[in-house]
Image (cartoon, rainbow, N blue to C red; front, side):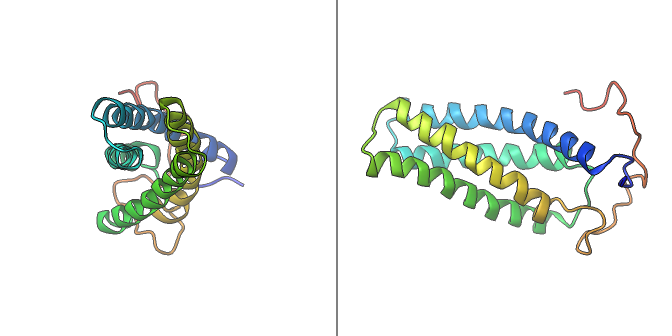
Amino acid sequence: MKHRQGRSPLQLLIHELGKFGLVGGVCYAIDFLVSNLCHTLLGMGPLSAKTISTVIAATFSYIGNRQWSFNHRARTGLRREYTLFFILNVVGLVIALGCLGFARYVLDLRGVLAFNLFGNVLGTGLGTVFRFWAYKKWVFLHPDDPKAAPRADLPTELPARVPEHAGRI
């Protein structure tokens, strides 16, 4: 079954995962660097450092995902999208903080390695899986979803092959 973008559901999923992964990689680097800067250099507690880094990375993530990863999906309004995006990122943050808090306060692992392993690898990884699923389901809707507003700026058919210059940063 082909979608109106001329791609099968599997091709569309792979396309979205690739873009989501690139945006996520940049945002992961931001999250990792800011959390370590706050925790190790500024002496902030691990949960505070992770919260600040996640808020900064999530802001970049929203812009990248809205403008690039899911730009072919329907728009339902900035207020609705950003509110849901914010709520879902809070859930993702709770997942990361849960992993980090468990390591710190239950297992009593206090080193930088434990901070990064539980907060920046395991917690962020689990939160990312949740966010990808949730963004597709609630934030960046399929154009056929009843809540999706038609977008006049999108063609009804997307090219089967993306031009060479498309998506370059």
